[in-house]
Structure formats: C-alpha cells, structure tokens
Length: 212
Image 1 (cartoon, rainbow, N blue to C red):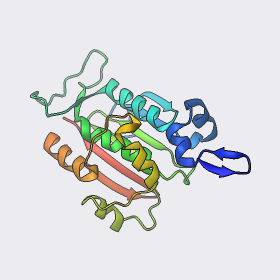
Image 2 (tube, rainbow, N blue to C red):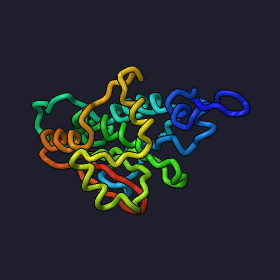
Image 3 (spheres, rainbow, N blue to C red):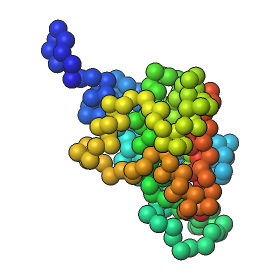
C-alpha cells in the first residue's frame, strides 16, 4: 500500500494480488481471462465453450487451470499411452495430454507479465484438439525479436517485477512450476517431441504447446 491524503491505498500490484474477486473484476475488467475450447485446431473451428474468468490473480490462475483440466489431461511425466485420434461419446477427439509444468508456467507467465496498459487486448486461453495456446498482451516495440529470443535462454524481459516476485513466492499459496520459459521449452519437447511455438507480433505474445 502507499500513503495518500486519504490514508493507505493499495498499489496496483497489491490490488491485483490481494483484492477481492468482485472488486478486481469491477475496477479492472481488462484483467479477466477469456478461455475457449474449440472443436478443431484453429480459432476458426466451432466453439464448444467460452467463458470469461474474473477475480484476483490467484483466483484466475486456479480457475483457468480447472477450465484446462476440463478438456485436457495434465501430467507430471509423459504417460505411457499411444497417440490416438479416436473420438469420445461427445464427438470430440480423445482428450489430449500435456505436461503440467509447462501449462502452469504458460498461465502464470501470462498473468504476471501481461501489459494491462493495452486495454483492448485481452488474455486468451485457446484449447484446441491437439494444442493449447496462451495469448497475452505484450507491446512488441522493444521486445520482438531480440527480447523474445533472450527469454528462451532465461534472460528476464519481464513486466511487473513486483507482481511476479509476490505471485511466485510460496507464501502467496499457489503451486507453481519453476524454471521459467527455458523449463517450458525443455519439458514440452521431452513430453510431446515438439517445441512450443512462440511468437510476438501486433502487441501480443503467443505460446502454443503441443499435446499428445
């Protein structure tokens, strides 16, 4: 909190981290996340479900993981199951499998490093039949391509360092993966045999993780 003529007032970071879900949703509507399950492998495919997830950072992180788990299986290690294209009773392809740490890191990274100054660009989670994509607001000027390349090697290019520090602290109460983007790339490749697709353009940062 900071001092003002009216006494203590929360900082922007403190409000996002510790504000009540209702207050954050009302005063910072651009902090919400839109999560969509598509019946296909691109955003032009039919929509199965789309929800807007609101609240403080801890709430959004946890309910977003629950939404992902509704349509995909998250594993700590690669399961000993063959890749399949069989459909379940709903007509959708069988649930895809993903490394839990990579999905956790992609979601956490989006929440703590998103550029909320870009009010017209929302954070989106796209669940496709065989991939999960996280799209986040991130000003391209001064970041792409040099900054994007640096992040792959663990060189910090972070926005909102105060939010990132508290969010990743065990005392905040979340179970997070550790290792940043290098871990995400390494674990995803070991799990699926494919590196995630990373892109930064038009003030958006995109991570697409491939499932099996």
